Structure formats: C-alpha cells, structure tokens
Image (tube, rainbow, N blue to C red; front, side, top):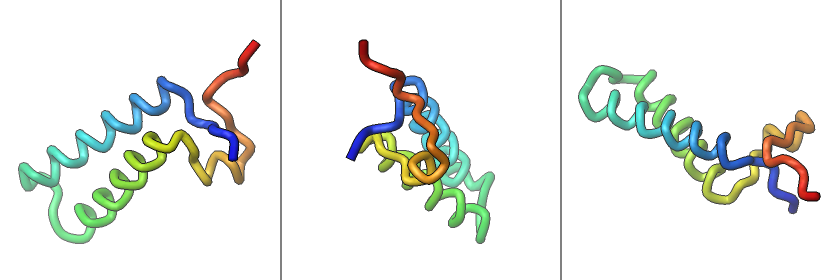
Length: 68
C-alpha cells in the first residue's frame, strides 16, 4: 500500500494529538467529548506512524509529494 501522509502532515497530526492529550489530562475536556477526541487523537498518531490515512485514500488525497 502506498503511503499518502507527508512529513508536515505527520507533524501536525502529532501536535494535534498532544494538544488533545494535554486538554484531557488537565481536565479541560471531560466526558463524551474527551472520549471522542481521545479516540481521534489515537487515530491521528497511528496514521502518522504508518504514513497511511484511509480517509485520504478514499478521497484521493496525497500530502507526501512526488519523488523525482
């Protein structure tokens, strides 16, 4: 399977996940929104680790760039 997540995209995903983790840990987010955003944050980290985003595949998006 071809990768479709570029370095900038990976960085943004990890930073977003860290922000969500901080908000949940500091109890700014709690309840159902905290659970939902925590799951989204985990998905963001996993997709940045494997460099493949299933949603990008479905939409035909590629942020990795082209090799010359």
